[in-house]
Length: 246
Image (cartoon, rainbow, N blue to C red; front, side, top):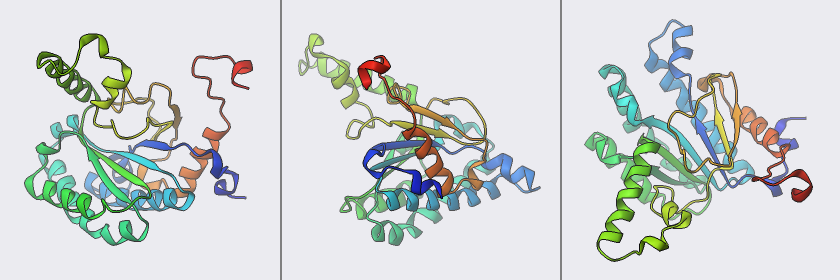
C-alpha cells in the first residue's frame, strides 16, 4: 500500500510549506555544476504540485529563492533567474489544466525585469483558477517581511488610521505577505538539514516540522504523501494536554 492510500483526505493540512534544499549537493554528487541540480529540481516541483492537486490540497508554498541567495556566485544567480524565466511560462498549460492559481511573496521588485514580467503574467493568467494556490517565495526573507509589516502598521498609526490599542495578532498577520492565506500546518525540509532558514517564521509558530534526508531533485510525490501521512499521525495540542484535545 502506497502512502497516498494511508492519507485521510478529510484531515488534510490546508497549507503545506516546503524548503526545497539540496539541489547543489545533488549536482555535485553527480560531478555536475550546481545549476544542473536546479534544473532537475524543477521536475520535483512539478511532481509535488501535481500530487497536491491529486489529493485536493488548498495551499502549497515553496521556498524558491531567499534574499540571502542573491549573495551566491553571480553565474549561479543568473542561471536560476534564467531558469525561472524559461520555466514559469511553460507551466501555464499545466496550471490551467489542474486549476492551479500561482502566487508569489517576497521582494519581487528585486527580480530582473524579464523574470518579474513573466511571473506577473502567469499570476494574472491563473488568477481565475480556484484549486490549489501555489505560492513561490522569491527574494524572500521572513525577518524583512516582519519588519515591513511593523512599518506598515506604524504608518497606519501615524496617519491616524489605526489605534495602538487595536493592534493584535490578527492585525499583524494581515500585514504579512501571507495575510490572505492560512498558516502552514506542515513544514517539510529536504536534504537532511535541521534549520528553518529565515522562512515563514511567524506563520509556522504551530506547524509540524518534517525533515527528510532526500535531496530535493530526488523528492517526488510519494515522498510528499509520506510526509502528509506522518503529519496525520501526530497529535496537535496547541499548548493543551492530550486529554483536552481528545
